[in-house]
Length: 332
Image (cartoon, rainbow, N blue to C red):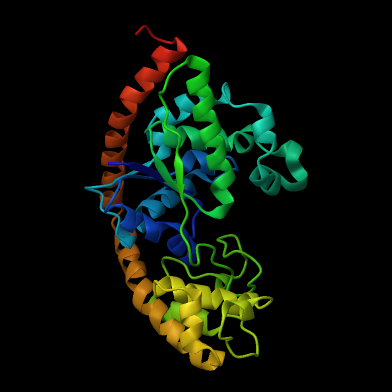
């Protein structure tokens, strides 16, 4: 069976965008792949994190996986820092990756911004650690959003260069899995900006811990425009808020934007938003309720993380033994 690896950063306040863009897809992948899902806490500390908050947020990511329907018996759920192979292999890959490759990473430029000289070395080398996350398990496929495609290309380059440098066929060339409708959920207050946990307005996002009433209230207050919904996707151009709400409906209904517009084209938002709200409450409400139950039982979630780390470690041990033999750290 092909193997999936993916992870979510434990930086708190997980939202509908995380669910529709990533976590919901993780559930369906369990049917056809061996799945390894991580709370990538080592990636999180590329910018400073409060230690107590980081521990809580790591538990929150695990709870979100479970609440969405990831089965800890068939899939592996763990915290990245609890499996040493991630850090060990990242250093080896730091010695394989070329500076020119990392200099082309657009996400570093975006995150570092004008304070590039004050950014951490970890933030710069983030893609090398991401490659180690994936290849420590010899994962064959990675579900990625558009913003991670460049990092996955770097993972493929590192795997290929390692294999070529040492004359081996050790690492697979990983294939991306890119999902369609509404993988990019935008702010409910500004359709031109991605839904974000860092947005100062709580009404910009629907979080995993929002109850049904709160979900309904946020969608009622979601920004729209005065025109009716168009009958085709072309009519959504230059209408970011309308496009966002149609996209959310399509994703929740497991439909396409065009199907939604075929059904609701010509309708005012006063008609469409209550139907969207009912759908969101029906689909996402139970996830939030289960999330709250799990967060109230931290011992249960921590036990799943501990067991998952032990299972993950067993998978990485033979890979790291092979890597160390190839590099020359230990005798064959």
